[in-house]
Length: 470
Image 1 (cartoon, rainbow, N blue to C red):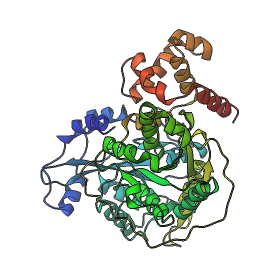
Image 2: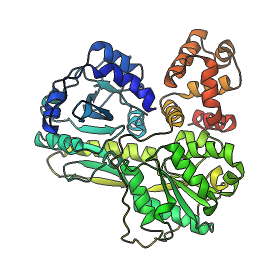
Image 3: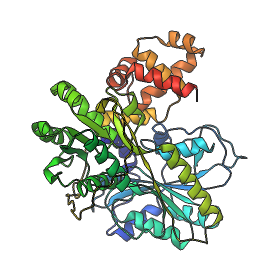
Image 4: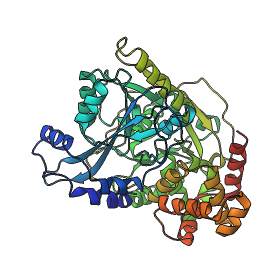
């Protein structure tokens, strides 16, 4: 995925002025940057549409894209994308949002409350501040993509606070601890999540745990790892496999020691799918006898075979709480400092735990003071590229697109698909082209070869049938 994104960023790189000598100058230099219309259009090719809808209030979403591209001085390039909800009187057609990997919670919020995000024609943080500061209904949503360990987040939050602009973010936005009393948050209850996972393991007499795929630069990964590590004292530091030296190295280290474990806890569903795909070729029997537990409950985790057991909060609950928090900020912006809403986790058992149901338990594991210390200074972390792209695609398409994917895997032609779905041939071809674009392929064969290992047709049919009755 990083190579995929690099092609976008490479076209922007020459638009930036020479590197600043310090962080403050970098902020100032960046605030004055504008991107050319040509490059904006190029980015839109890789963006995802929201459902049409109208907003009750105006709101601003500040989208931060941190990347590891370095200028001559070694400073990070930081890009601000300023977005706002459209008013019902505004035109809604052909607008797109700049979400890499789609922020599912924000997208779900937009779907539930029939809202649409529209790009404001500026990339200047000063213009965002000046616009939002004079709007009594302005709220800044912080939507993260890939986060570097730096102080930009704190700096931006403080700037918003100075102008009395409420800030809303998800706790996985944060990578370094700082004073967030000026930010409102929805966060995952890691204590709840850890206890649920451990209770399930103990109930099923599975006590030999490994934690796989940890990215030390990811706040979500490290919080989950610490949550398990501090409650399960049998888990040693050597049982935590990181991607610091790449996915191949992580897998090789785990594979050598795999027989020590009867449960593998995955920091996210994407590394889970990557791991299981590797094991299918190296030791398929190990998949059958071992529990694999993911942490996202993504659509990919449901459509993949074997389907992935997962512990996560409900995306719909997160979306509703995000909007409730937004309403609170709009209506009571001067009445409180900040609010943190912690979301309850749910356990969904699937193939990777033999579909054994979770027996709800209130047992809590004693919290110890054990601490994890990982090297987070590594320049670049490798990610499972294809699972990321497929999950991103699945998060941004509709049921007709899913039906088309199923028919393509079954070998149907565009004409046969059009007749089956009662659509015009041109509409089907347009949708197929969009699907190819989302996976960065040119031909139908390449698309099918990419998605086929990750989408089980029976599970896809079941999901389409379920969603068609909602």
